Every structure is written in C-alpha cells, then in structure tokens.
Image 1 (tube, one colour):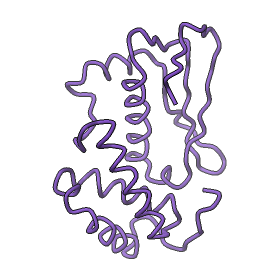
Image 2 (spheres, helix red, strand yellow; image 1 turned 45 degrees about the vertical axis):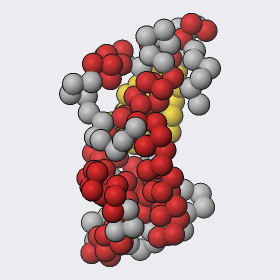
Image 3 (cartoon, rainbow, N blue to C red; image 1 turned 30 degrees about the vertical axis):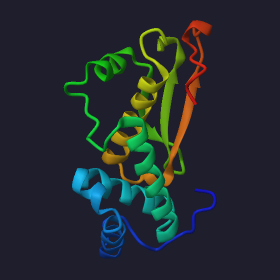
Image 4 (cartoon, rainbow, N blue to C red; image 1 turned 45 degrees about the horizontal axis):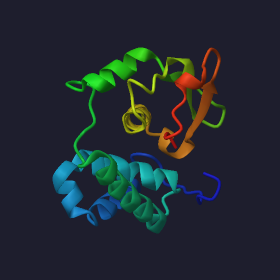
Length: 167
C-alpha cells in the first residue's frame, strides 16, 4: 500500500458502508450478475486504496474486466463441483499461513515442487492462485489493505515444475 492514502475510516463502519454502496451502484450489470462478488471486491478495492474512491473505482473496473476475460463470467469460484481446483488444492502447492507479518500482511507459501504443468496449465493455475487469495480476503478482510507476502519455496523443484506462461 505504498502509495495508498491513509484514512480514518474503519472496516464495517457506516462511512465504509456508504462508500461501498456508492461504488457498487456504478456497476449495476455486474451487481445483477453476482452482487456478493461485486460488494466484496468493492470492499477490497476501497480498503486497499485507503478509501480513495476514484482509485478504488479504477481498480474495481479493471478487476471486473479481467475477471470476465479470464473466467468468462462473474460466477462464484467454488471448490464444490470443480474437480480441477479440488485436485490442485490437494497438491499442497499453495497455502496461506495462519500467522501474519508484523504489518498484517498474509503469508502465501508456494511450493513449486508440487506444481505439474502437464496437469495444470497456466490459466488453471492462475485461477487457483485467485481462489486462494480471494478466499483469504473473505475470511480476513484486513488482508485487502495489508496485502500478501509470497514465499516461493523452490526446494526440490526442477525445470519440470516450471511453467513459463504463469505471470
């Protein structure tokens, strides 16, 4: 959050709720498709940008466009009924540590030796990362502002675990 302004608004306050309502009102089609997702992302964008409304609006616009492009729609991403995501979760390639950094950032561990690009293409793996991060922010809303530290463990990994198409 290096360039995000600081704010006295607190999570769950009436002032935050008013900003969330104002922001989501700008995206009626997306709200009609998946209001829970849009509200959740509006919260995340506002918190991440220190409640700078214009900056949050820009981020939410970009996210919704990216989401439609990558996923095809705004449907909830769930493990239930998603055999590929279930399978990826079982690999243990990524997990969120229950502890936090001193500044509140989440610790996302990636163990490359558990990634098999022949089973999971870059698009599928990107969706896996997305699921982990989004689920973490739903369970701990402060992560939207604090962010994540990614710890990439290459122990035991080889070039066979590498997918050059993953950004």
